[in-house]
Amino acid sequence: MDDKQSSTFVKLVMERCHGSQDKGYRAKLRKGENPNTEYYCWDILSSYVNLEYPDDRRVYALIGADIANRDVTVDGEYGLGEALAMAYQDHEHSKDDTGPGGARLRRLLACQNRKDLLLVLPSLLHLLRSKGITINHSRLLEEVFWFDREDSRERTRSLWAKQFYHDWRGES
Image 1 (tube, helix red, strand yellow):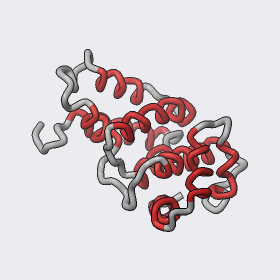
Image 2 (image 1 turned 90 degrees about the vertical axis):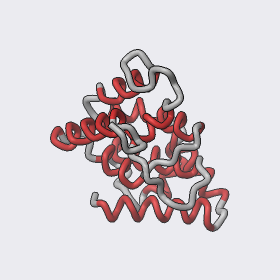
Image 3 (image 1 turned 180 degrees about the vertical axis):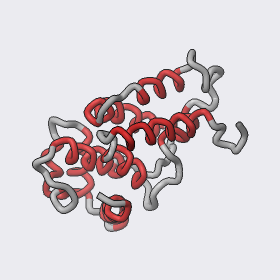
Image 4 (image 1 turned 120 degrees about the vertical axis):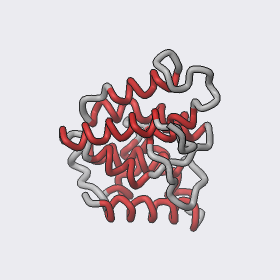
């Protein structure tokens, strides 16, 4: 998978869910959030990913479901670490280890493979949706898709930590 493929997937899903008001398409994708009902969106996913690989399929289903559950027409600008920091910016201990943001980040960084990450992400994406924080779905799709490769996993985890601990307003 390359950057263009992830961008194309995100763009087309956003157009189809929100541009054409295709409620059936959007409803199918929403089912992708739950592994037990994910098969409802396989006809959509089959154009982008080999359905025989459950982890690859799960990544696309989760990102597609998050897009379908939001009212956005363009991809967001924030990385996962930035978005998590923004979700807890008003909390007293937002960036230290005693705060809920730090605990969520530690759980995210503790993931050793894509399976672990796919267990943690749904609740995190739900939190970000509930706070109205838009994320860059194309970037997240790439990061999660390649998370099983050690070099990519380490790069991604360090990026998320850097984004979280760097003040999103531009201050350190």
